[in-house]
Length: 319
Ligand code: ES4
Ligand code: ZN
Image (cartoon, rainbow, N blue to C red; front, side, top):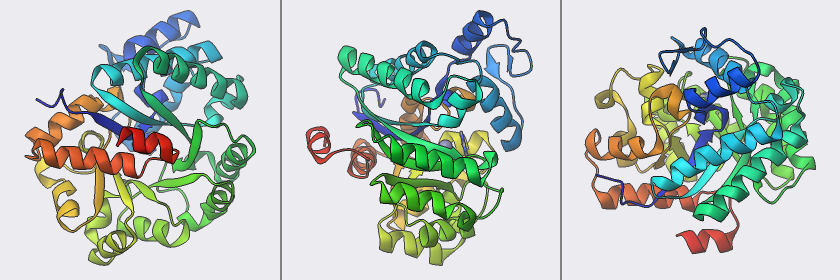
């Protein structure tokens, strides 16, 4: 059992953490049909492209600041019940814009949820603004500009998620320049759907402190070596990788090889109900599927906190 272990997570998409029951309640509230995205209490999708469509459809069911506060607090309460002391949630102002709420109210609702959860449970949370690659270069740059303009104390990082096969990292590098200049921590989804070249491009062109997934770096020893040299942390999401068929099973997953090569890694839930997982389950997977003991698992939680986009006082208190 891993329930007793203190946990930390630095890669979870907020809308991707909505339980199907909450999405259904939201759909009832707004008179929307969900049979195309939810069946028998589970999200329905069959490959990465369909997953992204399903994700955007679920996001469109959260329409007010209060809806977002409820979603945020619901997720953080679940994390805290699993003994989690720190979380970073990935949010995209585009989703606020798309349903006509606007990015400011979207962010304000999420911050309300974070404060409510902190008051009730003590969990520390920070926000990573993300651009969605499949919304196009201009939207990713706009997300970076939004983050740079609104230096809210809880908003500490910038990411790019979405369809990794769309364009090359070079096309989006300008967005990361804007975020870096604003003092935000940088992380980018790479080496999940695309191969090691995508991780190599990210390291060269973005120079992020962390990479979302990055597991397919294992396909090129030179890229693995570069990750070790730079000390870049991989936000590994094993359950997500199996659900999206990046690997057929845990035995084929490269988490242990990356670790053995000296790459800094931690474990995360990504979009937990979409992938039939939770942070608690990812810790169980580390123990049961990867055969890790408490000390090895705790070392990954420390890596998450060491590489967290958080002020040094908070980091010291949590470590
Ligand atoms: C995502 Cl697993 C994954 N990959 C890329 N973009 C995403 N957005 C939400 N989940
Ligand atoms: Zn992700």
